[in-house]
Length: 325
Ligand code: ATP
Image (cartoon, rainbow, N blue to C red; front, side):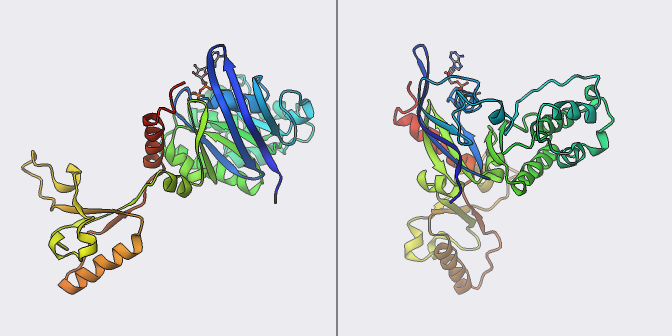
């Protein structure tokens, strides 16, 4: 088994009366991408900055790349890359110059050309930093974090403000770090980003981890079900086998049924089943359609998204009073 890149046990941080982090355990394996999610004020920044060695802790054990960030020295810092939401390199310098200057701070930097290629800035290498677009600026931020050849990278909301194409490109770049064996701790408010990039996810709320695991583990913990729907004209409710009839309902999504207030709406009524047992349900539906001599072209099977799961987990924690500090 690989040694952990990050091992945190019983982490606490108080600011006066406020307990920002209230007993966090976190384990990130070497080479893993972990997404750290949570609502505003949940304690993400506080936790991450303790791991980066920028904030002191009130209590708990913290090991990052085998050392305690509170006492680790420069050699340790060189092994870590940090991409802040906004770093501000000098605007009058050129891109390659900026990365070269940065590289001089490290004992074993990655070749400049390789870094520029990795982040897709080769063509801009002679461009002044002040002339870069917002997305290119963020690529440069990533280049500066990578030039030191880090084993562990902290990525703070790496695609905030990106257009959809730039986000996809950034995701491909971050995915590429996997091949380099870099461990990544990613904080983001974009659930699709976490779903796309992360091997595992930890959800923090009110200073406590309320769920952790893969997106599937989280969906299971939140008792999220898969949504199967189809047009009732193809297989009507009354034709369903007994065991499905009780679980099927008419969709209450006006987009699906055709809004009653909209005279132009012609969508047929849709039937919906929420289930954990996708294959048996779909098989029974197809069998019914076959018996009726119909096609079921309208069939839609939607696994829960991470956003659904996340909202459900936060809602559950809130109702249980676990978000009260
Ligand atoms: P966001 O998603 O908004 O960035 P976060 O999850 O990063 O939020 P933190 O910034 O860690 O949350 O804040 C956790 C709690 O600690 C909040 O209640 C915040 O107001 C409080 N807090 C953070 N930094 C300080 C500080 N320096 N002094 C006092 N309270 C603080």
